Amino acid sequence: MLSTIPIELREINKDSIDKEILRAGVIAELDAINLYEQMAALTKNEAIRASLLDVAKEEKTHVGEFQALLLSLDQEQVEELEHGKREVEALAGKKLGI
Image (spheres, one colour):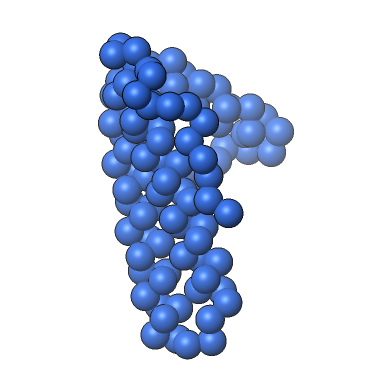
């Protein structure tokens, strides 16, 4: 099942629209990754599997592109991502190799 964007982008104020567009892009790319990887796991055809996994990998690059742009616009997001990483490291008891 694919995600539904939880907001109507046309109704977002002008100050937030670029951040919301990028978040919607991340959602779409993550959906695509999940879909392609799930289909790859189901097929018995190696050529199809390889192609699906290759496309999924490209979508992961797109997530990185959108995230880099989002982080350049939203300092709070930068701080909260770092906070979340520290919380996980504390729970895991070690530094994450991310």
